[in-house]
Amino acid sequence: MAVLIALSALFSGSEAALFSLSARDQRRLDSAGGGGRIALSLLGNSEQLLSAILFWNLLINMLYFAIASIVAGDLEANESFGAGWALGFTMLSLLAMIFLSEMLPKSLAVLAPLRTSIVIARPLNIAFHIIKPLLPLIGTANLLAGRLLWPGFQAENEIDLADIERAVELGTDDAALIERERLAVRSLVELGTMRASELMRPRGKLRLFHPPGDLAEIFEQETPGGYLIITDESRNHMVGSLDVRLLRPSQVDRYQDWIEPVTYVPWAASVARVLDQLTKTDSHVAIVVDEYGDCIGALSTDRIFRRILAPHSYENVSGDAALAMKDMGDGSWQVSGSIPLRQLAKFLQEELADESIATVAGYLQRTNERLPRVGDQALLGRYQLSLLDQVENESTIEVRRVKETDAGDGTAELEVDQ
Image (cartoon, rainbow, N blue to C red; front, top):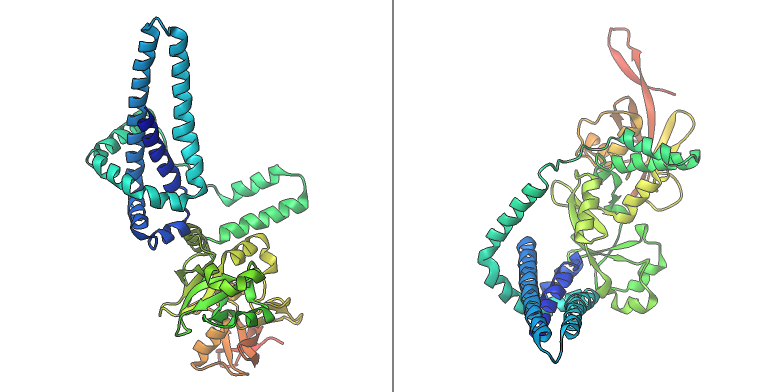
């Protein structure tokens, strides 16, 4: 019975450890030796692994209680002990199984899941391959049982935005709170149609760093978004991120230990898909690449949630307090050249003929077929874009409405609306 308790504890602890590993811990298994690689391969087929663990645990528990029943029956039949001893032994056996093979091993495994997974990987791998030929039969039995017990389950219909807004209105009588919640819900829904290139921080506004280097210089200036982007030796490929806001002074000398891997997403991916990918990989920064494979910007979870919770205070990509789109009061706007072109087109209610252009400055460059210069102009539907100023990587572009005038020969010309 003691051996069966130990085996049951092994399988209970392995279940808790393996299935509580985070995505980051699973990546560490690959470099944790043979035990780590075995655990990672077992997790590659998690459904069959769970079935094998549950099968062995059930088999062991049945054998344990069968032996306990036989011993309890012998105690009851023995005149020296009687029914009281049999009942006491049965209760003690039940408590020992609950505490020693379920509660204790699972609690210890959750405290150190990575180390536990490496230790139990080899014996668990042997047990898994012993029962592996029976796993298809077990899976079929589970499927048939599910069809028999829950045959009428159907997928729920998608919830409309109007339903969500109605629920928000019924949830409180505070008008200001209702408006804030409605804006948050709309922003959340818009993540499904907003592209990564619209919300990303452009490459020119990122702080790039290549180890080894003097990290103290980074703290002398503000880091846009709080994330330092780590590059490879070529300084062109972004391979990691470092949250300098959470880096304590005692950790500066070993900052390499706090560098996180990044996720790569295409520029046309929706922000909702990017957030889902960041959650699955347990990352905080996604690197946005264009159709040529070049890194054109970065998008962090902080920036996404700020867009959800504060949609009207969309921060300027340069990091200062000024808005990226400034109303000049005379029917024109001044915008930063690094804001997404699709965002400007939405604001102006204009259709884009080519949605592969990421920024407003890029649109000027594509239209004039050269690097933007002061005075360059381009038409975006009913609006004229003019480059007013350019300092280093920051450009200021004027957006002004144009109107059609009759040229006298039956044709129409565009004239800037003053």
